[in-house]
Image (cartoon, rainbow, N blue to C red; front, side, top):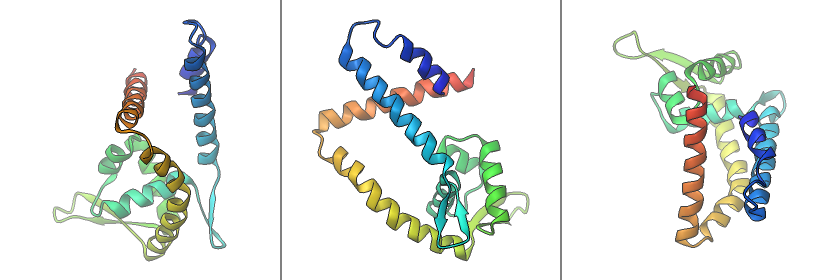
Amino acid sequence: MLTILYSCYTFSDVDGNEQASNTFKRFLRVVNLINEAEKKSISFGGEIMLYPSEVHILCVIADNPGSNITDIAGLTGVTKGAVSQIVKKLEIKNMVEKYHGDSNKDIFLKLSGIAKSLIDEHVRVFTERECCFINKLSSLEKDSLSAVDDLFSDFEDIMKKYLEK
């Protein structure tokens, strides 16, 4: 993803719109910060270390009981292969359990007891941190918030098309 963005970064001043260029450069810095944050593991009281991607998958499972790998991939925008790898790591860490549905061929996921308590702690911490961003978005006029939402929607579509190639 960053390769595509960096190639655009080189040409971001072409149209002469300095504000758009500076905003795009800030966006790239935010993307880089998010990528760095994804690489850091989070300590949950001692020996339990989880990566943000693992925590995110746990939260999706918690919010969507009875989900399977395909469901989680659709909800997160991550490939089924990546979700499978993360779930395998979470199984090894005793955070997720697999179980069969009524047909006995469908495999579903549920949180272990320890994962449920970790998610509660994560939600508390994440809510404190995320509130700043949510409050900022909430303070925008409806038209401005719609413009931001449209922009992120466009970015999402562009990246999906790029990844499909």
